[in-house]
Image 1 (cartoon, rainbow, N blue to C red):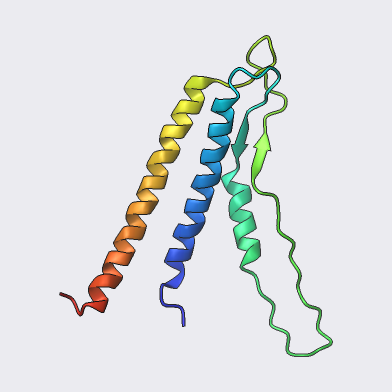
Image 2 (cartoon, rainbow, N blue to C red):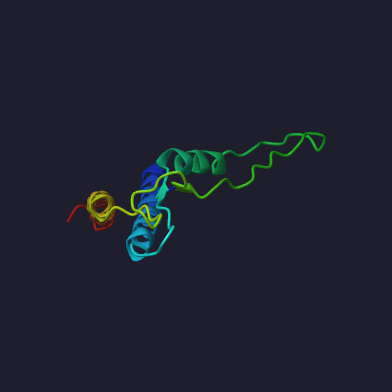
Length: 130
């Protein structure tokens, strides 16, 4: 029995993506003065593809059937190796990173608010609507 449906799982995956993106942005900001440092970012498309792969399951009705084995994909983090913004080779643009951080924080807080709403609804149901 799936008590929470797919919504909680989707919200959890969204929070995982936001957390991973926040780590990449924090790493970029921390290395703003490191020569030859290339910025890192997280690809939503790759993270989403990994999540889709991990949910596929095979139903074997005969021992002669091959079992599906899907290996975990990339983490979705990639580096902008060809981009260079300063003479020392560092590619961190603080204004862009701070804008990304603000955008990601809004996204994360929206997901947290939605999770709280879901659990609030469940709490109301458990208490019998009181």
